[in-house]
Image 1 (cartoon, rainbow, N blue to C red):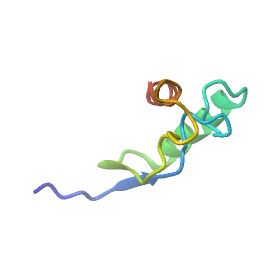
Image 2 (cartoon, rainbow, N blue to C red):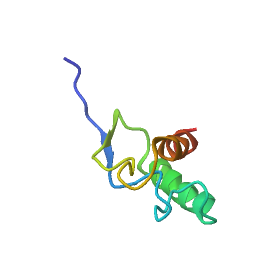
Image 3 (cartoon, rainbow, N blue to C red):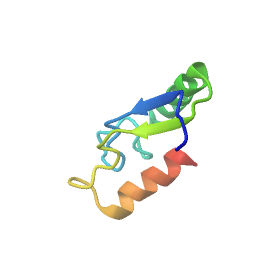
Length: 75
């Protein structure tokens, strides 16, 4: 078993929903994505990234839209 020493946890991104701060079509998308990436840079390298739920907004967005946001976010 591998020991994890450092973790970054995020939640509630709701990718795929127009109200998400990280919706690819939102005019603030680039600024919001840059701010989140800056946070990741500031905390430095981690052994693990934990995504605690509500990554995709599948109840209010279609799969295609949600996955497009997901691909764009992690590109």
